[in-house]
Image (cartoon, rainbow, N blue to C red; front, side, top):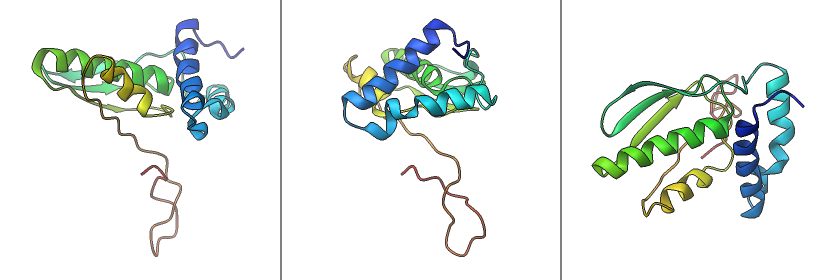
Length: 141
């Protein structure tokens, strides 16, 4: 309804359903409305795709291009797996990203390849540090 390419919509739905399936409801379908809101208010450009800015055999720096978070997360984990299968380790960082949903979704992709996958993410400033006047810390541990 908001013009998302079918493949990107499917990737996003897969992450949302996975969150509910593994009972991490806060990262599941509950977030569908947030994705639609972000697309409609141009916080997210749903039909953009991540781009590799710089890479070597075992690392990559990705520009998420403000695409849908699950599209970015999936792309980054695919890159990490590809690099790890060649060199034994794959480290991928990304900027200009959006909410990726349940981080373990991406780690499970590595597990399916008999690899250890660790997914980290940040979040928008939502909490005030001690003695601060405004939010500066994300709520994501």
